[in-house]
Length: 146
Image 1 (cartoon, rainbow, N blue to C red):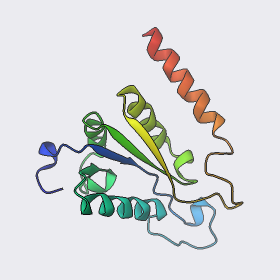
Image 2 (cartoon, rainbow, N blue to C red; image 1 turned 90 degrees about the horizontal axis):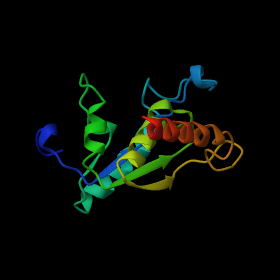
Image 3 (cartoon, helix red, strand yellow; image 1 turned 135 degrees about the vertical axis):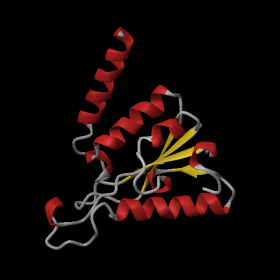
């Protein structure tokens, strides 16, 4: 970001789950530092490529340490497109689910980018994604009543 964050107007926003690989998440050894999993690396790759071709984008990586990450939702409202970095961790992430709800609420075009399969080789979200669909439909019904 080449200016103060409140003056930055991206067209693309990126949704990703960090996906920390550590003992707490079922790995035999800690492979990543806290909050520094593969999803962060995948996001950084996408951000770098977009910036190289002059496309302004925003992700949680752009939020400086110590700042409230919820500024992400302010930027989301200014965007036209969301790139969703699909990984197994994405479908286990409450914040990613919330980001998807907000993207649809604000009319963003959501483009999924498949970066990582489940351990058995199946697409992320193919097992248990029904929960996301049910929660999404429940939130839609609540907003229609309100």
